[in-house]
Amino acid sequence: MRESLSWPQSPALAQFHSEPRIGVTYAIQSPDAVKPYLAKRTERIRAAPTEISFGSFRLVPTQFLLLERDKPVLLGSRALQILIVLLERPGELVSKQELITRVWPDVFVEPANLSVHISALRRTLRDGRDGNRFIINIPGRGYSFVASVAIVRWVELDGDENRATLRE
Image 1 (cartoon, rainbow, N blue to C red):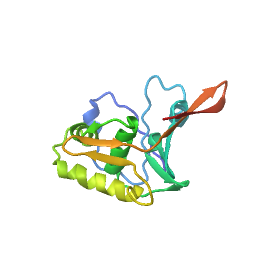
Image 2 (spheres, helix red, strand yellow; image 1 turned 180 degrees about the vertical axis):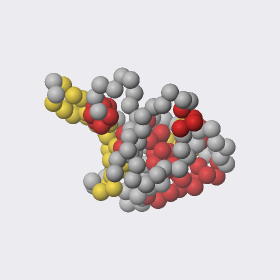
Image 3 (tube, rainbow, N blue to C red; image 1 turned 30 degrees about the horizontal axis):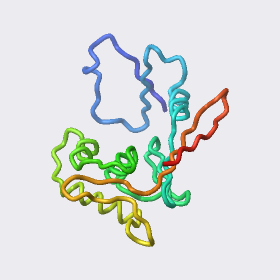
């Protein structure tokens, strides 16, 4: 059974239900909706997806996905966000404060939380083992992603997807 929600003339807050009802689909349509939502979403993803490869890993930030040899890697969301921030500026120092601000916006967090998530990230990447070195710590200052990185950008030309690889 499908119900759609229509916008009444009364204030929107009067119609707000804090608990979702099972079996009810809510549809919200913006005035400028020319195409279905999914078509827009697909176009946005196809417009600028980027993959970042390092070692045997590949990060797809737009999908919030880390792969190792094409298999998904289980990693907590905060550790994955830290990795994304570090990979935005490979080889550069990212301060502890910037990492905390970017990963925990508008939340007070002890620096120890950052250390815990960096440790989980290093463990997952096997950093420091088998010749792998990805993240280094500059004591009291921050962290730097030091491994070689290949950035892959997908570019759409005349309806065809082409791949452009930038090595750093």
